[in-house]
Amino acid sequence: MARGTCLHAGAWWLWALGLAAAASRTTNPLLLLLLIAVAGYVVAARRTEAPWARSYGAFLKFGLVVLGIRLVFAVFLGSPIPGTTVLFTLPEAPLPDWARGVRLGGRVTAEGVLFAAYDGLKMATLLVCVGSANALANPARLLKSLPGALYEAGVAVVVAMTFAPHLVSDVQRLRSARRLRGREDRGPRALLHIGLPVLEGALERSVALAAAMDTRGYGRSADVPRAVRRTTAVLTLGGLAGVCLGSYGLLSDDGGLLGLPVLLVGLAAAVAGLVLGGRRAARTRYRPDRWGPREWLVTASGVAVAALMFHADGLHPSTVPLAAPALPLLPAASVLIGLLPAFIAPAPPRDHPPEEPKK
Image 1 (cartoon, rainbow, N blue to C red):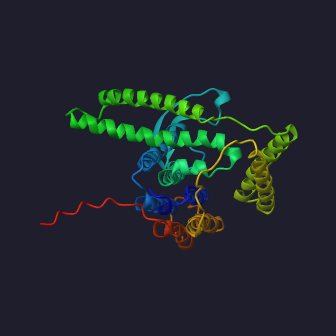
Image 2 (image 1 turned 135 degrees about the horizontal axis):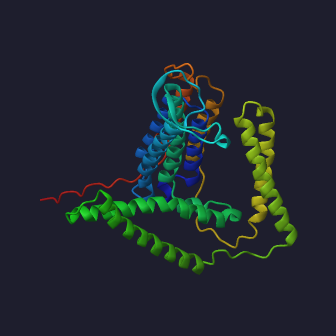
Image 3 (image 1 turned 60 degrees about the horizontal axis):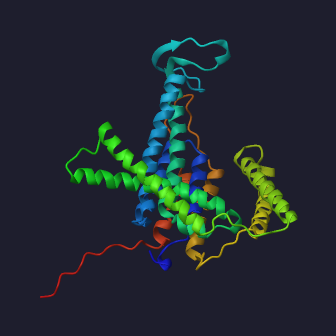
């Protein structure tokens, strides 16, 4: 894709993190499904044909697996929510006194299963939001935009993020090859024949990546005074600790007053540490990506979804007693703001069919 027809990778991640922050504030299944639908629509409208763009389906399936595991745990290990509506009763295994509070089997209530379903759907929604950012953002361009102090850590994160897309691409390619040869592409036997070439390709790719990183001088740092290194470490670690404490204060019900000042001080200290730490990174940037009005609008849409969800009502439907969840209008309208990137972000290039020759 040309540079002028793609959005900054950081804007996609900030938009997706805004949706994830909104999902972390609610257990309402209607709002969570609406968030998944918004993320899926934007991905379908603005993803490219790149290998990493195909990973959204894998994250969606992984979210369904997490939801299923959460329900299985609630059925066999119990739920912290007391309930009176018994669905069925499993044989209960006796446990020693030191495992008090944990059970294996026993009564399975509708309230406990419903609470587990809400909680599992929230975790699945968080995975879908991360998958949407992974499918829309170019990891190589995201790495170019990182500050110099985070370059080495950013390389590790980008390599980890690109592992899943390449893995999905290799599996799809090998399954297609087996189908063309008239062989089975499903089942344990096919999984064994597909898994070994995928593992071999991953090892070869890792060796090639290590050689390329060594050739480009990865890990080389400039000489800076010891005082600057210590100051950088103190500012960065202290700033990140302040960001964590401030975020926790904002997310909790009691620490809202102190959460914002601590968050701002932590951000300032972290930025100062990153600026000082950038002196050690001996790297240059070639044609850095620009941050324009479209990037601001995409980021603002994600931030608006998260901000409007923080003080909304109807975010936690009742499970004790059992009640059908209702769709609150204001939070639902705020979630729909997340659709803005589907209309303002640059459209990916489409392959046009060849024109018929003129007679």
